[in-house]
Amino acid sequence: SQQGEEDPQALSIQEGENATMNCSYKTSINNLQWYRQNSGRGLVHLILIRSNEREKHSGRLRVTLDTSKKSSSLLITASRAADTASYFCATDAGAGNNRKLIWGLGTSLAVNP
Amino acid sequence: NAGVMQNPRHLVRRRGQEARLRCSPMKGHSHVYWYRQLPEEGLKFMVYLQKENIIDESGMPKERFSAEFPKEGPSILRIQQVVRGDSAAYFCASSRAGNYEQYFGPGTRLTVT
Image (cartoon, rainbow over all chains, first blue to last red; front, side, top):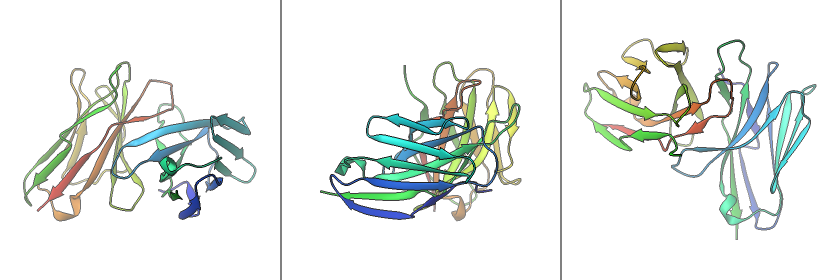
């Protein structure tokens, strides 16, 4: 069953602008992860934020987590054409031995040069 | 350290044939996950395995699909009597026991003619 829902479904911006994507989920989580997928390729892990963290940075990426609203946002600053990809959030709501991730449908980001 | 390996990268089968997809996890990873992705869609979880053990197969169709992760060798996703609707990209991911980040292979694109 789908847990994360990304918003917007598609986003088109100019190079140099910031891109913000949101993810909402339904149940309590252990952590939330963001991944990127270039067209036709496998997914690449970007960043993991734990349920007791509120904000995390990695290079031009900034992720926030609001567990009271069950939502997360991914901000890409100073975007580049190479950031064009689909971005997925995934939540780890597993318990015990079952650590599967639940995936959203993704946000398709187009960065125009 | 080699990443997650999947083979074949492309597989064409006629309706009714069997498809075998292989996944070699990253060195040191004992958890394997299989996902299916249709064009322009998100990832759909299929099955989660540890060595010699299926942890969660709730996303895998009961008929025609099976998965294994033996003590030695790669994980295998097997689809018997393939139908056109099985055409999709199948991604494998692996993670270290107790570590939640998943590392993805490049995928196998199955086409059923």
